[in-house]
Image (cartoon, rainbow, N blue to C red):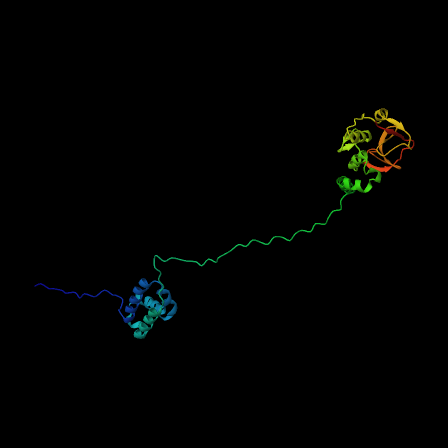
Length: 261
């Protein structure tokens, strides 16, 4: 006789399925798809996170009767409302970013104010040089004002008066500078009369006359110096270094009067 023994089969223990389980699965699916909504649900519904934690901690026990009564319908509706109202921010892949750049214009700064420079007083040497220059430039005018009446109509004195203000230069015989004999020979040369270069030779080339006989245009000689007589007690000459050709009084102590020709 064959005895058949049939053993009962038991289902493997598994986690009980409740409405809360379905809610957790649904929330997990949506958290993987909507991305940013997960943070909003977690922050906005502490109840859902708390309930999920409670379910996870209670699941291993396998004791169905130990679960507390929960109003899963209200919980599900609250969670779905939070998920539906959470904002979704999306941006296209080809989005272009633009920035408003203010227009900047450069303006040239105004020129600095002029610097006031205090005038520096000219040195005495510069002042003397300026005076000498102005005197030389104004020689014709000075000649006109200092020329005695005897010059008018006298060919020798009219030529000699042109060189008033020319400086004394030793060995000079031109308007750039003259000494006494160079001045006399230069004036007479313009009348076509050639005279020696030294004062002593000029005296020897002429005739000695008395002062009473002397006429404007004759010569006045003294040792080492010669000039042109201008009538009365005046003469025109180049006296010495540092001086210029001028009409002046006869200053020689014992002059001799010389007539040329």
